[in-house]
Image 1 (cartoon, rainbow, N blue to C red):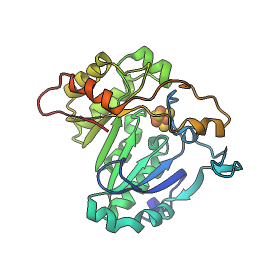
Image 2 (image 1 turned 135 degrees about the horizontal axis):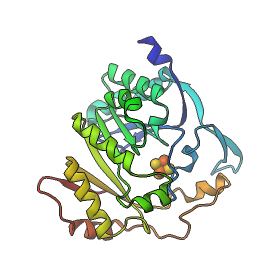
Image 3 (image 1 turned 90 degrees about the vertical axis):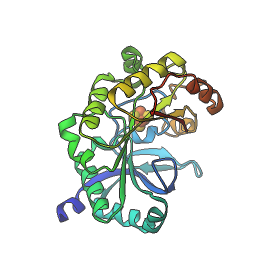
Length: 263
Ligand code: SF4
């Protein structure tokens, strides 16, 4: 399928030797563009789909973030670390922004990786029209699916969208038998309390999820907002301490067999 290898997309960054973005050692490809606007986003440079200027952290000079690449060009980078993937059960992770916003490119890249025996993981916010992005999901060995909360009003206020289409997509993926791990960013003033996290666990377990990872909020992306000349919506809000979060998670009621992990 030469056509798949020639598809083009806008890439923000390619990060080798990632160990937080799925099993084993991975190369994470960050695409540009996201339909959400989470106030706590640590990758604001991935939100707009168009390439844009950002000040470089080291030199202070303006650089362009986002460049058009073909599937085969990205794969040339990804395949360099195949021995590491093979030795660690790692592979390629497609992230964002939101990779489902560039479905043709994402499908092509994941397909091409699988053709070379590389394990494929997608990190997604889950907000998309299911039928339009099913061909992308089909190429995934594993899907890391964000659930940011069950409170519709807060979800709309803090991310810009309703959670309902996201939940529907999660249920459809599970019904189709895809391997899914739910990831929950734990965010102050949004969902950092026992009741909010319990509501997520109740929903996810009733939908058939068997593994949930909780990710404590951090402020590592804050300086990027200044470098993009944007205001950080979560300014002044404290980071979530992983040990404190573990105490809350340990007090949650979870059905037998469901794994709750604090990352
Ligand atoms: S879904 Fe992810 S990339 Fe998109 S705005 Fe939210 S945190 Fe940022």
